[in-house]
Length: 199
Image 1: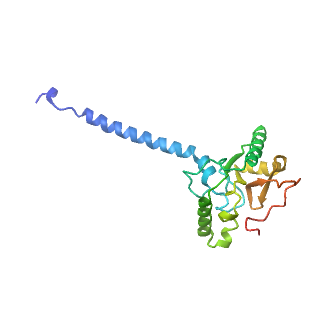
Image 2: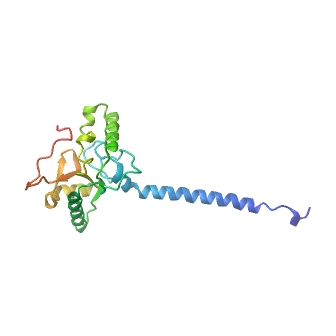
Image 3: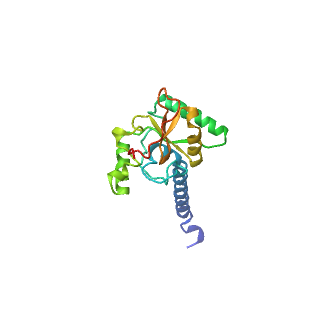
């Protein structure tokens, strides 16, 4: 058999090589998209109270974690319009101070809030301890669109320092990232509760 009559293996080898390259590129694309969506996922589905701890991380919570929310709305969806306006004004002022202030969690569905509470009960071992971080849906200001969680750590502390300038108040002493509107007619923020349970 002459060399020219031999069947060529190159096309099959090229197809395998092409498949490997395409698979690798798709894998890289998925990883890049997942990494880029980190802040978005934090914004739409991660409850920063469910994880405990004294200070938020880059995603606004103590150490991340919470409820998956691929189909959840963006953070501003469902928020009280005035709360959203106040946050945006604070965000612009923070940017002028070279501070990154992001909305990591806003409105949540009752189902997401319940899932967060269930996760917290499992994490902390009791409903009583879980309620220090996550309220039931019927009591959550997030479900009503009346609360925001912010990040990163520097941004949360910046807002805590300047919140009254924008009509916002830190609600809980154990949650530097959780803010609600200054009550109507008030000229100063009420003293934060120790935690959401009222402790």
